[in-house]
Picture (cartoon, rainbow, N blue to C red):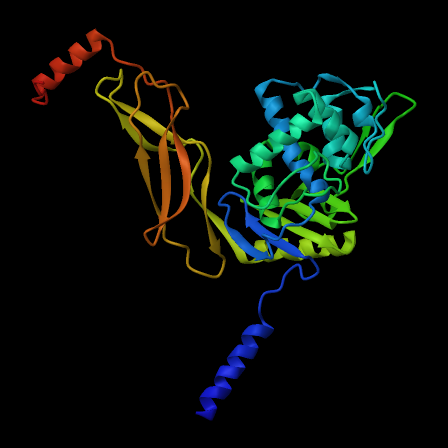
Length: 381
């Protein structure tokens, strides 16, 4: 009995000694594999904390969406309002009525975390920062964020302005779907107002861009309430990780904890591709369409996260299609693909029509019926 008790105690001590403790200086932290959304590590990841300038990731989602919809363009010139020019904190020192391109303002937001630049863009897209903030919170609901509320577009400390490490990771995952943003966040230095007497040197606030292999984003943050924060993303081989650390004591400790977090993920995990973007995964059949069988595709790579020193997980997938009225547009959602492991759904994604699915004309239906009759397939209704 004593031996059994001793073994139990030793096992308990051993498990606690070697319990995983990453980003130990952060109040909260999380590490996510981007393509699968799977969490590799987390600590207090749902705790509500001030997110500081990591807030701007949500602002950037709305800005990138506006660009992709054509509501604003990169070469569009923005006239800076007095409200935007008067933003405190980190800034590119915009003056009221100064004119600057959307492209240069984005450099200011992504590299220098400029509060004046993000408010100028918010006002350009929605007319006021207040309306922009309501759109930020609507987007948070759409993304399923449970511990986030925004009171401004900048991340400056304000009552009832909060998020969590998990929600920040989810926002980052959504943001990097817009490849263009990584072109800005991966630059270490650049210039604004070139060829003027007010030339301004931009240096990325994320110093790991220069020192950590594969890092190309994403957003730093600091306020007195939030402490030092960082949402970072790095890609090595075919795996992209997203890490978040919140409420650190200094920028150097923040960077050290983030490095440890990402190293853990890259050293121990890998992704295996199950399906490629635009792979045909099923067929949509309708005997009233111009083509009876129509290709169904996915619009993203589907990967499986595996541990490097373990056997690969065994997964399968199935496609569930919805019947729709003809004609069907190209890239129209026609159902979902489910990835299954041990009879459990571990991932879902939409499936789309590869091409336009047209309604068959009378002549096509007549020829089809004749062919079916000859082949013995025709059924009289």
